Length: 413
Image (cartoon, rainbow, N blue to C red):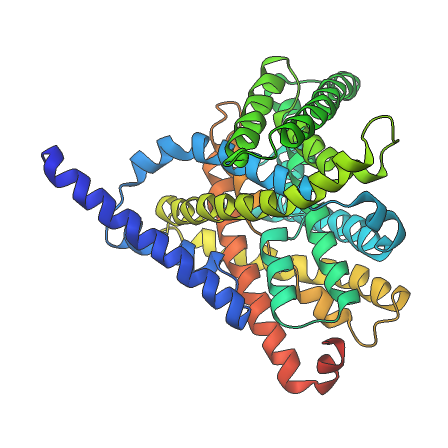
């Protein structure tokens, strides 16, 4: 096929994907329907079903799209993490995040270690733990968006949104630690030393870049396109941290947290005028970054569908079983937090708002690129299935709860 035919065809497919991403966002905004379902389905149709998008070519793009998605997730998580609010107003969200992530990780690890071998994939305990971390946390991009669209009151919305934001971070950081230990075949003591070293390098770099970017934003406040400079700084930070044997994701997260919390820092580190200016700039920064995150998310989830193996029924079986198992694992944490927060009969709703998303799949793709992890494709295909199933369960379960139990309406504003 000559290039004159390839270019228009590529642009046509790109326009279809982008339009589908926008329509999925409209469905999310208007009806609270999670968008990963539609984007992965589009990828499956354009990939394995119609063979329009060849799987081999998209597998080669995975490391690059995955790295961009990782930077986008971590920076967005950092910008959304108000430490003052987290400490004072969202202790219930922190409780839910820790308990739910712990119980879900244990459930996912047990499933991978004891059940998955029955279906033909023999995983070691560290590999099973890695899988448990992948599926351990709900997705901020899905849960926070849906919770804000269905009209929950501020208390429940804050709990669900912050919990999903925190578990996104838990998934990426804990998963990368285990992956590092597996690749380098380290013992517990060596892992602890290496993690401490990596985290110290990453956090120091993130703090330095956070202040550096804040200074650039303040000094260049009269110029347009300042977001481009900010994005380039985050990409450079990620690369620099990895080059210096740190962790790029943690560095980008730390820089975002610094930018989001300048007003709580000592006055000698940030003047009042600078802080107020940056508060105003951060609104536009978050707006532009959300557009970029949406763009990356659209192509990433479509890619997930393209590389998904629909011919192996084990993928659907494992994804369905683990999705239901994660639902039961989450219920005790949801029940406890609903009582602590005095949210009448909110436990079932908190339980079903557990959809997995971008962080889990990004981590799965990172694992798939590692030559040291056996059955690496198992992680991509099973986690992709878990994303689809948990989003379906969230959507269907919430509307059933709302229809059958009028008390659910009392949880809404």
